[in-house]
Length: 292
Image (tube, rainbow, N blue to C red; front, top):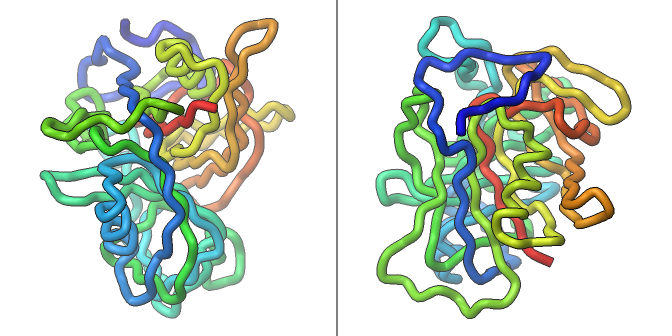
């Protein structure tokens, strides 16, 4: 059904709301630790080892990665009525920097490897900032360990989304691939606008019969932020990633807790635990959870 919750902050999208607000699929969990090799673009540094490992789609996380150069975008307000929000002009730190931490969705665009990554780093002025990394232009400067969680028989594939007027990732089953042996499960999901992020993740777990999960993949945007400690950010255009997140079953049913990093249009970083029920998705949220 179209979104029914009322939030303090909302935006208008150019297209008709899609009736399916959360799309997800599951499969046997695959997990790999691998090395991001220097001299490669970040896209190829991920794709080459993951393709060899047989992971077709999922998420990658890494910390303390030196890159040179770094190319990136930041969130921005839309300049017309064709989008609810947009991106800044391209930015670069040619001398490079160290990526403090990052989360990337690994999938396919037009059949080719494609990576969507949000990260936090030190800017040229030494201050923490963040944004959307351009993975085919940013180069790994020193070897660094990364971790991937994903599926062999499914991926996140891009397609045009009329509601938001963007080309976005969607969980997609691949034909002709055997499913991995069932044990722990991985779920790939995409959450649409105006769904509370915390509650939507609980809904994903509920729909797959998962009582305990760790959030591994977490690239997306919300409309500002309400934090558990009472802080409120009114920025309409943001990008976020989950620093740590978990879903557990308790006396009140499934409950998720999301400790996030949020990047505003100036590239400033704000961190904390999201308040449940008060943080609608802006454009989309790409989710990868691992059953525990």
